[in-house]
Structures are given as C-alpha cells and as structure tokens.
Image 1 (cartoon, helix red, strand yellow):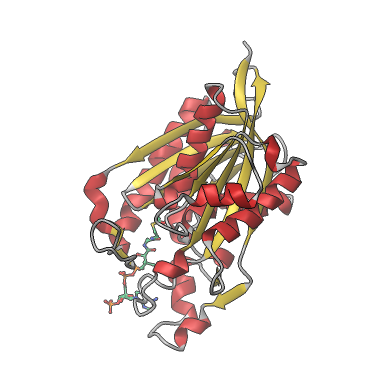
Image 2 (tube, rainbow, N blue to C red; image 1 turned 180 degrees about the vertical axis):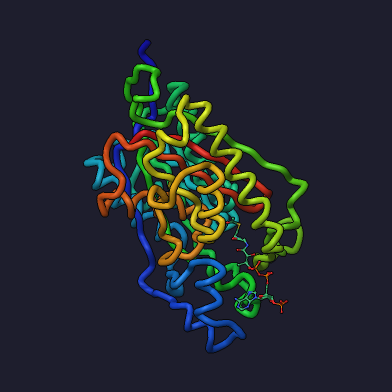
Length: 325
Ligand code: ACO
C-alpha cells in the first residue's frame, strides 16, 4: 500500500560562539566542575552574545539545513519553530525566521512545549504533511535559555545553554511498512497538574515581565525517567518496532543520568545513544535537532538508521517519535 511519509531531507545546527566551561561558574557560585559533571554530565555550554536573538540562531541552523538539503527557502511550504524563549511576545519567532530566510509564500508559526517542543513541532509538521497541507516543512528548535536563568541559583543556572537545530521534512511515498524512510510514529503527552515542578516565574498576563526559571530538580528527574521510557515504548509500538530495532536513541539532552536510566529502562545500550549534553548543556527545544545534526554530520547516524527521539519538559509535556533516517 502506498502511503505518504515525512522524510528528513536536510539538517543543520548553530551554536553561539561563546563557550562557558563549568569552571566559569566557580567564580560566582558555590559549585564546582566536579559536581556539575558528576550530577549532570555537562562540561560546557554555549551562551548567545548580547543582541544575538533566538531568531538569529534559528536562521543560521535553517540556512545550514537548506544547504544540506540542496533547497531554497522558496521550496518550503511552512516553518514550525519550537521555542520557549521567543525574540518577542509576538510576532512569532517563526515569522521573523521566515522573513530572514526571504521566504515569501507559505506560513510560519511557533510551538511552545518547552524542552519537548521539538517533538511537538515534528509531530505537527508530520500531520501537515500526511494531510496534504504541506509538502516541505522546516522544523526548528531554537532557544536562548541563558536569558531566563537566575545566575544566583546554582541548582538551575549550570544546566542550560543556547543553540538551534533544524530539520527539513519532505512528503515522499512509502509502503506503510516500518522499513520506510521518514517519520514512522509520534506520541505526545502533557499533564498540567505538574506546572509547579518547572516554570518561569513571570509572563505577559501574570507579571508583565519575563521572569526566571524555577525547578524542583529531583521531582522532575523522577518524572523524566518513567515518562520518557513510557512514551518511547508507545512510539516504538505505534511504529511496529522494538528496542532491538533501534539504531540510535536521540534523547533530549538534559542530564546524562536521565539519559542513561531511560535507555536502560527501554533496554537500549548506551553505545546506541547520541550524547551531546556534555558540550551543549540543556538547550530545551533545540537539544534534539542539535544532537541529530551533530550525529548526522559526524557520520554516527546513517541513511536508513532507525531513530527514537524522546523529550520531556515544563508542563509537564513529553513525547517521542520514531524516524527512519
Ligand atoms: N553545585 C553544587 N551543589 C549543588 C548544585 C550545584 N550546581 N546544585 C544543587 N546543589 C546542591 C543542593 O543545594 C543540595 O545541597 P544540600 O544537600 O546542602 O541542600 C545538594 O546539591 C543536592 O541537591 P539535589 O537537588 O538533591 O541534587 P540532585 O542530585 O537531585 O541534582 C539536579 C540536581 C542536577 C538538578 C537533578 O535533580 C536533575 O538533573 N534533575 C532533572 C532536572 C532537569 O534536568 N531539568 C531540566 C529541565 S526538564 C528536562 O529537560 C528533563
């Protein structure tokens, strides 16, 4: 049976120039490189320069993805951009990116599911492609989390970084089997009962200010491992594949201990897990497309490989997707 699949035809990423090593936090906080490495796996992260915006990061990653795909912005029907750190309250960062790319037609909009944003954006783009609404969609995750950190809170400020990743999806024919290239399944979840575990203490309607990130780290940790493993299983089942079929898990890069425990729970060995958290920290919605792009560029991920992506973040919101590269 012939079906439409959303196939990845281009990828790219961008990291701001400034690298912040763990040791830099030792100057202003009661913390250490050893503590941060041991508890999170993070060694360094990138922070955007003054005046460098989320849309600037998204632009560089998108340009690289278009070049990688051999496409022009005019070949795109839509942009779906996941971010929790938009340039402005409105318009959307996606429309700023659309303008920067000189894309005249089509449509662009933002998705807000914090660290799970890329999975939600990917699922949305997939649905638009399967329904025939769009043929080529640029899916972007871009964040400047450094702008919403309380630099006096050692429990949160050492965890996050800035960056952007982009993936271009294109409608192609498949057979309906799990051997098809493209997105095979997605699974989305949220539960607003957990709003208080991870949030920003400001906002347009509440305080008319931006606010900073607040988190109950241990609670988030516990939810992360069980919910990520469950959504991963659901996505694999929906695709008709098992853990043995997975070539690479491309997890949200929040904490190496979460990544390890989730992989273990799903029965996938760590040599099949893409790891960039050591160099990027947690870049929220940008973390999966960044990891994808880095692993594809360095030859880890090869055409035909079966990928499982999974992420969780504020909301709580969480989800997973399987994709044959
Ligand atoms: N340096 C040194 N000590 C620290 C630091 C730090 N950077 N941060 C916290 N501590 C201290 C605490 O103050 C506490 O001290 P106390 O015992 O004197 O009170 C001690 O370390 C233990 O604190 P815990 O919060 O229990 O430490 P834990 O081992 O849970 O690690 C961490 C904290 C890393 C935040 C962990 O809970 C975690 O990774 N949680 C997941 C949260 C996450 O990744 N969130 C990202 C967004 S959601 C997502 O993307 C999945």
